[in-house]
Image 1 (cartoon, helix red, strand yellow):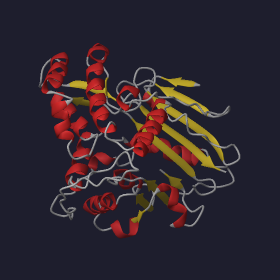
Image 2: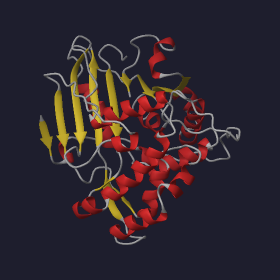
Image 3: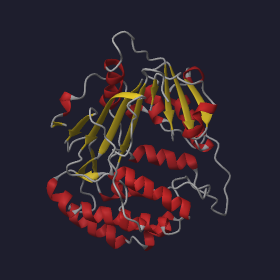
Length: 354
């Protein structure tokens, strides 16, 4: 295992980062019809409620989530180049963003790769992504992106096998990149000790109120998500006969918790799983300035509101989470308008297809 204390040993060169993105406006994106009943899928644990305007939600999401710096993408591109066999020159022809959501990662990939396949399970997400791409690259949207409505498990029915250079399976010799990040964490030690438990408690109570109303299938999905997050994706297994040059990077594993909720919120025991094979490279990076955001309690509250895009969450927040809870957190932060530094637990798994 390699432990790195400074970012300079991992980050190399710069490209255009996603902080240049312009969110779509409500005027250039067709809104879904308003409904009076929630009709969320009984099989999915995370879904934008039909009664929530998708444009408003994703605009809010992009404003409150961390910006992936250019260096994060460069690490993937450098791996794709360096881990390729010397006899085969790596190509940057086609990338695939699976579960694309609002399309911000696909937008960043398009600066390096001529064409990006964008897929998601929800047509509203693809509509938003298409308009986001058109807003930021109006002259090249039709040539740079392909949009496909599909589950990740069904990609083979839509695309020829072994045709992608980068997936964010893969082309023979292509790169698979899987990343995940958890809740923001107070990065200054004194506030991490006093404020983080209060924030974790607020988020736990929100998730508990939602999971308690979930179907058994949804609860099982929440359980899988919690186990995978607690494992820092060490639960992912890469068969030696199919994958090589596996690298597992984690940031802030030594002091931050991955995952958005605990077993208490889910009503189950969280069970981390480790499937790291001998020979896989494991790198742990401790960097309390990673993806830094400086937020006051109001900005932090906006982030939390975007965690669960379900109708009624505002009401839930007024019940299981009271103004007093946020008031107590604000007091520990030094006051309502006082900003504190936040960093993130992050994991990136890279693998090459044989």
